[in-house]
Length: 425
Image (cartoon, rainbow, N blue to C red; front, side):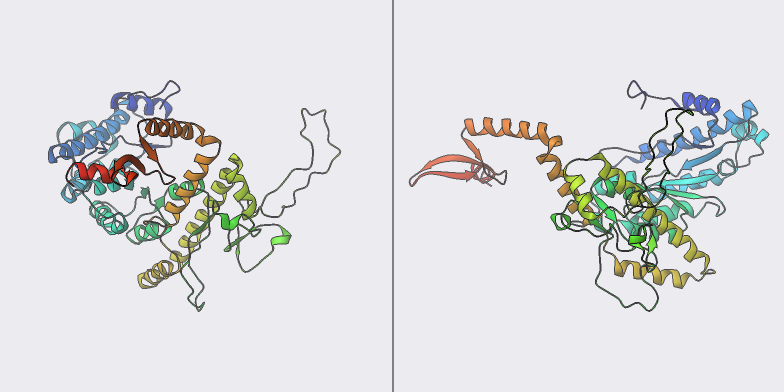
């Protein structure tokens, strides 16, 4: 994307940009398969060859210019094909030959893998490809784990592995277990977009704490349940204000749980010396009812506060996860128990009719009934008017009916049923 819209960038132009800008980290170009149907074997092979060639060309650019080798992250391609994923990982680790070996000799590289700083895995194209094959969305995680493990098998263990597109903390825990190091905040930001305030922790409960009913990883603040709920956003987190001083839970530093307001006026220049004392005290946390009101009135501040809160909760989750792993001393069994306990305490949010799906439905309803839905409402009204004029009525559920004259008089028959009868269905 550019200021003038989309622009197609060839790999040579991309490499020239990387050389000129000299970024700290470069994600090497990869031929990732985003196709409306499962790709052919020939297309998959082409994807592997292109990705390896583009990585080699990026490394050769550094060798020719005698510049320091940049920190390159390479995306592990191969789609959902086990053999293709293994072939790509092997292509990174096998010895260089021919022109590649000669041109990369100044960098002291014997394999392409030696020229990269880390590896990335994107779950989004993998999930799209699996859905095209008819895979069940609710049982897809284990298949994704197997695909990532195939790529990891041939890779060294001393370099970071980045994974993007995880849909829940449950999924993240599974990938931590197989050796993934870095994650993006995709699901936390998406939850904020749909009006969800995250509320979970790791470990899920303290040792010896009795098991309770499974709960959601957050609250859907679009729901009418929270219109008069004046509690804090999360039960597992408190604000910094003295009024919210509860030592039994962790502190959330976000702008929603620990807001601070400046009491002094804005100074326009050094001459505007203020005689006011600026207050640095924390204010009480914003309540669920207040965020519910902001969401239903389309206030942008609602999503800003939810994004800050959710990323703070996610950051705390990763911090606690790192601290817990450091205390294990390679005790894998203890980690497995905590992962299982997390699953027992928290409901997976991205399943059918789960928290994310319900929240998205409420978000869509509010968008339709308020300002953002105006064009959609007008379009729907026009369509309904045309249907009514043609003799088809639309009920309150959106089901179309066609007027039919029968022995008993006019009757409204659903269009779908009528069409099935006409076609002999």
